[in-house]
Length: 250
Image (cartoon, rainbow, N blue to C red; front, top):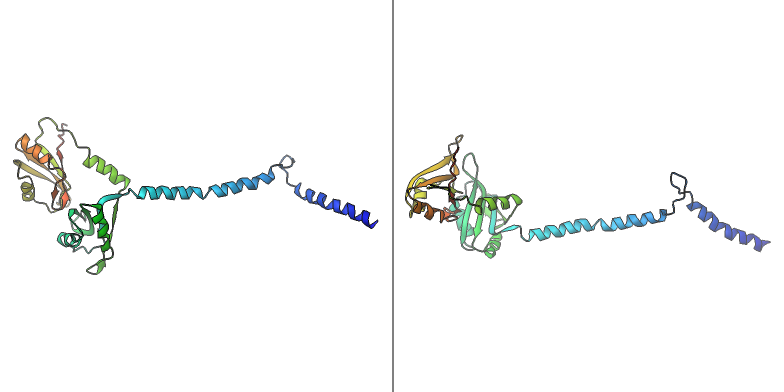
């Protein structure tokens, strides 16, 4: 009898175990046959989830490889009293500078401690990063590569690549990206190979300061063509934008 008692007990245990799994039913009272598959689906989703940020990070790295302007660095954190000559002398030790652009406050035209330095080569620009952390006065300057943003790409395309066509009878040129302290004499010396009739500076009516561009009227078509041919030539450390002036026929 002892042996017979042991046999039903051995058979009863797996039945009880099966009964413990059956209580899981759907809202219609039917057993959920695929209940065991659900964790597997969740595991697959958990494994796939980390791939998204990895792919995004890889995309950022790929974009970052081409997100710097060639040969250009940004120097920030300088004292407001720093002069253009001091900045040029500081960076000129690494190699020839193609252009130097100082950022200024729009209301006063004073230096705001930020400058853009463009070198002749990308290698020289990388070397100039050694100035990162350099102390000027009581401040530490920061030097880093100049990134290309989406807005700067659009601006570069529209401002420096898409020039307006020459209107009939046009004898005027738009001259932009000028230094804040540029004078009429500077422009006449710059266009010394052309015959200038007049120069009209764009002035801020509120402050009376220059807006950084002007219109130059020439006496003949030959002088105008010579001037437009000087587009992107450097004037006071800045590449000057020169294009045919658009005539408003309102």
